[in-house]
Length: 291
Image (tube, rainbow, N blue to C red; front, side, top):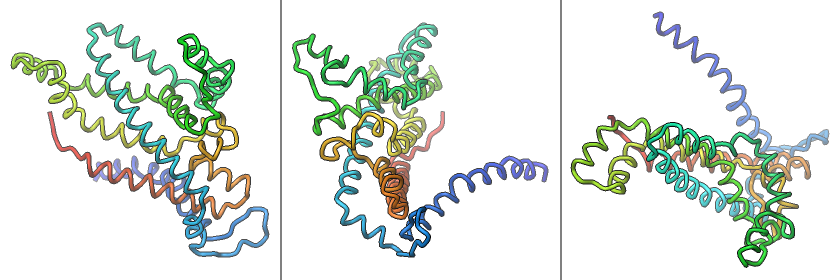
């Protein structure tokens, strides 16, 4: 009985917090999406699912959806691969001080607010004429690149910045997961003559399964909601809407066009995409092991 009271005492505040800040906003957002809602109007007529059917014929929404899916999946894949490789590199170092130093170096960009980092990159690294990136390229004999003005390059610029700003979190998580793998497994594999790659493939990756799933899901959710760099570095959604993502489009429709009913419908679609991708990811990468 005491254990049940303790569990209730711990879970009730968490449930109240979840209800107020997660469940109720989702329900409220769906409710608003059923109206032609403008906070400046006295009358906001009920339109049912018209806002959702309107999405199917909205070419700007389709462009934002395509850009978002491209940005998320390319960035997540590169993030996981690079952070896993760097985490393995760090874990191979014998000195704890050296490992800690590299962890700090890679984690430093995560400390800076994303909006502040976006301003720095947009004003000092990506500018075509005076940016650090093009100065380096010119020094190597390569022509300057219009990082934020070329529709074929802009999204890759956002991917590059996001990897720099966000990769430190996953490096820390992967190194923590690798440090938690018992050393006995590696010692036994060395006795059997297994090389470094084989130990990584047959021991590290399988036993890193739960960490891998957590990192992937959290990175997916985070990247679907990325907004700061697109709103700060991308001017007017970029040429041909090449820098427009769903979060930017939601903001534009809600606060510039004051069509909050339609913006809520877009937000519900984004919520459903995140939920479906997360469920699929959990199903596909389900692990069941102990050590």
